[in-house]
Length: 361
Image 1: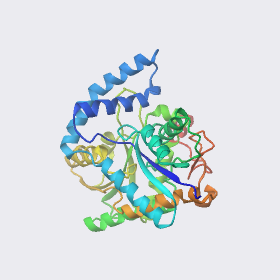
Image 2 (image 1 turned 90 degrees about the vertical axis):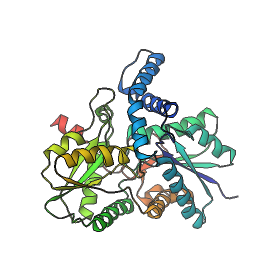
Image 3 (image 1 turned 45 degrees about the horizontal axis):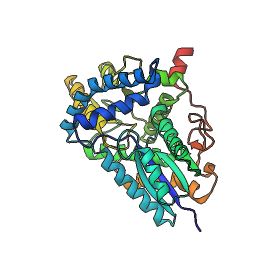
Image 4 (image 1 turned 60 degrees about the vertical axis):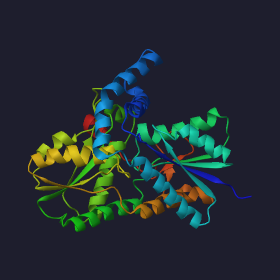
């Protein structure tokens, strides 16, 4: 009998309703996930700190959700999973696709349990974060492994940690920007136009712990710019300094004051779904700041070729379904996730983080 694979597509998740009852537990889970950024004498103290941070952040996030009419992240994640399932089953693969969220329902633990109940006998865990981060890709995969272990399910788990270096994905991202610029009547090579990559920030502490996230971000931006013919470009980070600790630089709010362009084409390079970080932070808050400085802003939507993205994801996981060596798709043992099951598009390459370069020079 052919093996039945369960493809678990791991997402961040956002609350469906802009209410305190939905938002505060969501934030507490996020802050608890990042608790290693601070020291606590006990788990009780750690949880108390997470509640404190969530209570402070919740009102502003609820306002963001209200301003954008609710987050579309979960809906788009389900749609992407359905498209990926369609591509894979159309190729004859015996696979069931699941959506699991790190911080909302359905939880990773519940989805792993559902896959077991469905008779799945091998898992492929795929974070829908193209650029590898410790609190996203690595943490989500650890949760999959932990869930299976806790329920004593001895199931093979194949892990794909990150995939920004995949050539097909990079082309898809570049073409998305190119089509948007044409439709908006913007010349990316005009001297007054600047391609502005906005990436989700990460705490410097994670870079000190060995994450190469910022190096990967810079590399990805550079490769996309090259495919677009070499427009002038820059990179800024969307930082969330809730804990009062150092985050990646330059921060968007400060960085735009250093620019001399007349118009920005803003590409949210870390994201493959629209969510509060794109619809509120960029489209509303960042746009207001950019326009106050006298610049025009054009924001590129997340990849609009959803079927194309589903094909990229299906291609990435196909080696696992066929029993082929992951290297046939350019996947090699991951350096960030210390697991024999984990592969990514970066494992064979030395991509140093920017933090390491600047602190050791």
